[in-house]
Image (cartoon, rainbow, N blue to C red):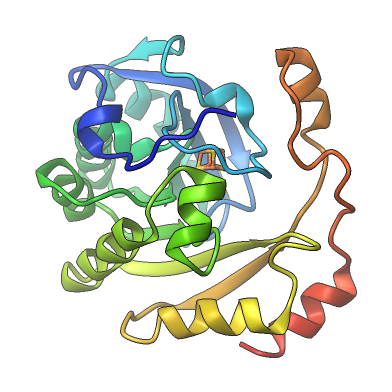
Length: 247
Ligand code: SF4
């Protein structure tokens, strides 16, 4: 597994005028409020052991689109969005293509469409600020409760993610925290309480606990890479229910 010690936006930034896109989902129901058009960006500097989209991680590849092309594509589905829905940009790590996402969100908002960013967070810079200027909701994954675990298991920095969340607060962007519960890794009361603790100075709407699933196993096989959690059991509904009670 490739580990990056301190990923930063300069390491992962791609060309700004176009976005390199892995795929689209025209009607998603689990990535942000309501029914949404989802844009999966290509490229991610992290390597979460439970990653569901390993095919979006390499920075090579992806299909180039202009922000206008994507906005036009998404707008066709607006009748399905209802009051709460809209467009979510996910990945990969969408903030690695911050200028593109900022332009896309600006265009969408000018057409009255709600915008949502699904991210693991990166160290904030001007491009990140530009994205947040045009973002209604941020879905931010907190992967593990300590900096050491981030470095070892994700190849990222928890500090950067927390700094990103503080910027979301400062800029008045609604924040929803998400956390994947992995048996044997993060399924203890201590782990969940530690995550709640480290968010003590951050405002957020809620914390969503997501059970670890292995639906991605085939993707790893197709890519010819080992799924690091192939022998880990899926997380049960009971565990999620028990841990949710702590929040
Ligand atoms: S941040 Fe998302 S896309 Fe990147 S490795 Fe982690 S789960 Fe996969």
